[in-house]
Amino acid sequence: MATKINIFGSVLSRIRKEQGYPSAYQFFKSVGGSKTIGISFGSYWDLERGKKLPKSWRLKAIMSALDVGQYSPKAQELVRAYFKELSGSDELLQILSGPPAARGNLTSSELTETAIEQALKQRRVNMTLEQWKIFGRDAVTHICQYFLVNTAGWVTVRELSDTTKFKEEEIRKALGILANGGLVEFSKDKARSLFQNKVVPMLALTPETAAIHARQRKLWSMWLADCKTYAAKRTTVRMTKENMEIYRQQLEKTVAMCAVYENMEANRQDSAIYCVESRVYQILPKE
Image (cartoon, rainbow, N blue to C red):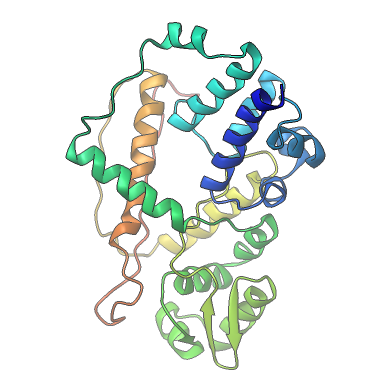
């Protein structure tokens, strides 16, 4: 029985790590704990250790907290492991899904995408809920953190001031707050990020993190209002919700893959920091 139960727990644990949470406790606290997942940490820890299975409706909350898309391969793998434990095998699931597709003849683009995803996965880390709150404290703290995350080595207060147009005293205060939160190193007149060369995904949207998301949107709206637009593209299309979810996941991958072109050590006179954003609006029917 223990071997069977470990199927779901081991898959859940591995996906949690792949999503950038090195420990179960960090994941639990970062997404808002029991308010988000609906169970205590001890109960969640029992899931990963293979001591129990969650209720089926609870599994959806866990996937949402992990920021795993409903139709993504990871979601399918987790659900398959869940039902495999319940039945003791996946034979019935294979009947529903048909024979597994052969993956031996991947196209060059698929191979490239897989390699990129694996490379980015190794750089993925998550900040704690408290660090996200600090990150969104105010515009100065927010923008200084983004500059440092995307810049290699030490950066002086003077350079931050010249680049952001914030006053030096405002920047010193923001750097002190970031340093106290474990986000940067701050020494005298210079600072550097503790998340350099890392991919930090946005927190999954949950009831506990909704206020953080709202604060992030507000700060970005203020900052981007007078920023130069580098490129823009817009179209409209009618599609089913299922197809939109599939497309959304592909769009998300495309945005994330811009990190492949990152060069943090580039000459700062010959480079710039860009914000790459994707938005999908439901325009009709109005809700």
